[in-house]
Length: 146
Image (cartoon, rainbow, N blue to C red; front, side, top):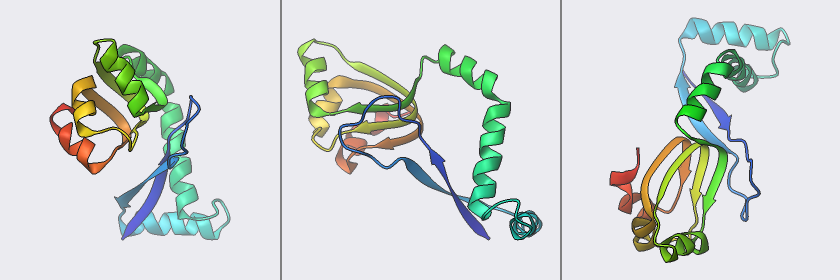
């Protein structure tokens, strides 16, 4: 049986256009595990299955918090939301530079960014979380997305 849960990206910078603040994922659970979750929900420990799953995920992230901090620092990841619109990428191009984007959370490339501009300014993208961009930009950058 499938159960969906959402993983929330923490926004650390103000967003110009409010993107979705979560990504839907699907997980498969065994019937016994699902029964245990339903029992805890029916006994009032959690409001629903999603509440249980979110709580379990947050508890695991807290348990591994120090290791996560070390990896984020070592890999030089931006934590939270990082947005790139056409104006920002035009400034990068005008400066004769390119970007290596590394995000833990949400990387959003604006709908005003053309595939050509993205190719000219983005060397690589590593996203642990979600990447929001037009289908054309994602296709253009496919070989640069890790």
